[in-house]
Amino acid sequence: MTRDVPSGTAPRRPRGGGGLHRKPTGTARTLLRPVFSAHRPTLVRLFLWSLLGTVPVLLSGQLVAASLDHGFLRDDAAVGFGALGCYGLVMVGGAFGSRQAVPHMARVTEAVRDHLVRVSVRGSILQAVAAGQQPRTSAVSRITDQTERARQLLANLLMTASTSGFTFGAAIVGLSTLAPVVGLLLVPVALVAAVALVRLSLAWRRRYSRSLDTEERLADEAGRVVGGIRDVVACAATGRAAGDLEERLRTNAEAAASVGVVGGARNGVIAFTARMPLMLLLALAPWLVSSGALSPGQLVGAATYLITSLEPALRVLVQSIGNLGLELATVLRRLSAFGQVPVLAAGGTAAPEAARGADLDLHRVTFRYGPHSEPVLHDASFRIESGEHLVIVGPSGIGKSTLVNVLSGLESPESGAVRLAGTDLGELSTDWLRRTVALVPQEAYVFAGTLRENLTYLRPDADQRRLDHVVRVLGLGELVRRHGGYDGEPLHPGALSEGQRQLITLARVHLSPARVVILDEATCHLDPVTEERVEHAFRRREGTLIVIAHRISSALRARRILVLDTGGLHSGTHDGLVRDSSTYANLVGHWNGDGGDGA
Ligand SMILES: Nc1ncnc2c1ncn2[C@@H]1O[C@H](COP(=O)(O)OP(=O)(O)OP(=O)(O)O)[C@@H](O)[C@H]1O
Image (tube, rainbow, N blue to C red):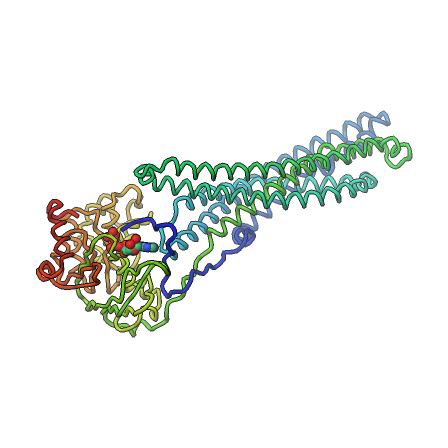
């Protein structure tokens, strides 16, 4: 039943016929806010330690000036060396502060990464579920890629913002108190540079965002080619597929190069801004000293601030806030799109009590996937009595899965009605409907958790006796023993066989309170004996059972068989249908001819 949705077809419509709305999980800022609020004390400690780390910067120029003006230039070497010694001690204290900041920063960035992975994986899975499609592997790898990128960017940004930001601030304060006239020299340079940098940064952000777009389109295209590689080879389309990929690669390379061009221009502005104050200071030094505006010590102290702190901090700050900050904002904006949680058009609110029993009624239902595609179901009507065991058969692609999707309310018909116990599915609350009608698809999903968590997921209050019963009738005892009991070793879904995963999923549904169980080739990975045991267990379970047959044996076990063919729906017993339905007779012949029972 698994298939790629052909490109160009309309996405599946969620129940209720309404569109797919997205509840935005917000922008980059709102994406980070919960983590920052939860880790406020860690952030405060990070900033306090970083602040301690910048004390040497604040005092550097002052101490150098003091060592000259009050020490060496007055032939008082003791004062000169004393001031420099103090500077050395303060630097040791500063290094200690910077070192203490690191673990706090790591704690915050790890928490951010975990949060981003949680939000975006959950969002993309819910989006895929809402659209009725498989989550795309390229989306998952993009999430992994981009959350890692976001973690690294944030770590760098926090580190530079908390060190260079404080360094820059401390150098400005130190410089302005030591030599206010030099502080004034910085103002025009800073204004010109700020305007240029803002403009270049905006251009950079636009280009960077475009480059990420092209990167994603490249990943999508590559995923599509790899996913359909057998098909590509089979129809000798490798040249065409490679051509498409090459085109995407070229666009991606051009977009990346254009980011580089703006980045280069910005680096030029940064270099100019960082050097200019020092050059001005040196050019004006003779006048500043001779006019008495600065003492020789103050001149060297001011140069110390400019060379050792202001220039490197400015460079790192602009680059980090410009590059890392914008890059982080762009990556986060993308991740927040992954994390957008779709809101399906809400189901009805009919009181579940109103729906007693489990008769399913399909009344003149027409369903098609796209407005211009052929209907898969056309004016289809039939009824399944509560407690009935029905088997559905039909040629491949005729619409068996579509029919059970409509019956379980996963798809809504274009016209006609589907009623459960007399109530239209659209009027029933979605939660109640999901608990009442359980559809088990071919692809089994097992959580990474204990067997008990997996088996009791749909009935958390299941008692031990009931659990043991289900495990026994479905033949899961050996698996339970091998995992050290229900609460033993957590399951590694990837290490289980497909058959084991199907058995666990089937047991979970068997234990659930569902009144209608639909098995859509849910036993396809089981051997015939296990399959028979499973179907027997479900037949004995209270409620309605609908099975899309995978083998003729399933049909033979049913009380009633529903055949889908181009003429519509026909139901009857095995003998009656062999006689009256050529489709059914052909299917039986095909199944038998394929080696007895095998599909
Ligand atoms: N999401 C979808 N979008 C567009 N068309 C779809 C979608 N899902 C199924 N179809 C088409 O609807 C038709 C019925 O598909 P469906 O899966 O219901 O058939 P099936 O009888 O279950 O097939 P099989 O036995 O091969 O699994 C097919 O032509 C299929 O290509």
